[in-house]
Length: 480
Image (cartoon, rainbow, N blue to C red; front, side):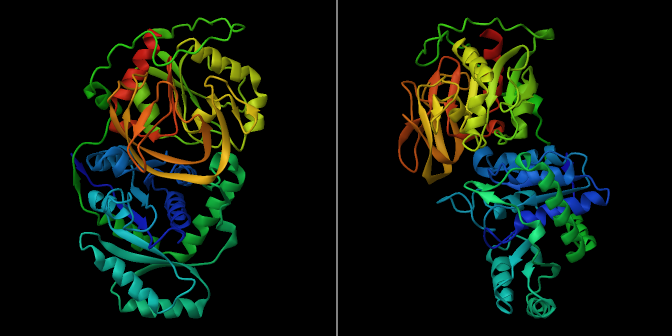
């Protein structure tokens, strides 16, 4: 199979240059021309893909060579871009920045090479003039395999400033494909973990994306950018397919009756029978809404391919789990922002506890871990785990190599996976009697909790790297 989708990678010399604004604006501008635009984000970022999805009407997808391996980048890209006229890939950090201490691994440069895609460098020109040529020359010549094919100048102050920048870049050999002035209406509010997600500011986000598109239409040569994208090299290989991935994954060992440390059932909550859905399907409820916005699209696709019916619910609004729920997935997000509202929804908290104490499989990552705790910043949560969670001044951030310590609904002990941590909260204790993961760096430690069917941890993982996780989880839904 030959992959020939026109594509561009938007990169920058450093974070804060305006990649998200320019990439999102480009996506929206091309989509408004009637093109089917496939949005992608390098790295583990969950928030930017929400803006990409708003701009294109398609699911935003991540391309992370650390979490998924370099061999899955092109297949995952082809899966997301299937049937599209154009793909726009937003980079992460600076063009050559990747996983700490791992060379180019997981960098935008590496992904651009794996996709054989031209790179457009977004440069914050607000505090320079002729020096911009030296900067662009350095980035364009650092790695001959990375094709820096154009520059978009961002935060340009005036017509005179633009003239100086363009004249300097005439000597660099890298064409200027856009020049954007400072514009307050495209700014997106941020807080402790980055931009505020789309789900929390839908109306304002729609306006902001519209402003980004208009700014890009006015300041960029869209025809030249599309021509550049059409010059991307062909890729060979098959697109990733969830059904094929699940079938080829190792069959999940049958779960043992009790996994990890058993927790007592609340005496006042009798176990509720969970009805079977037609055709042997099991409902897997996935937390969504404003408090739980962090997820990879491939997780739901893998669960569906493994035989589940995936149903989204909102813990801020829904007082019960979806009918027939046999398993629960609670990903990342910002429960710390909505702790009072989550706590006030006592019926759902009790329903989650009942499901978990009844032995159903529950996969909780980061925000999900906080939601299952006894309390979060003094607000009662679900009480599934005997832990206390609170906000912290310290940012915990980075890739992790992990190994499953305990058999769980997700993996057998000894399963190796790569993950990512990103939070400003702590839970005490940090691990249970049966920990979820052993982590090698930045320090050796165990973390997380395996308790009956519950697997809860701070670690975000990408199941495309281990499709057997979804298969095992759905099998546990059938047998619990």
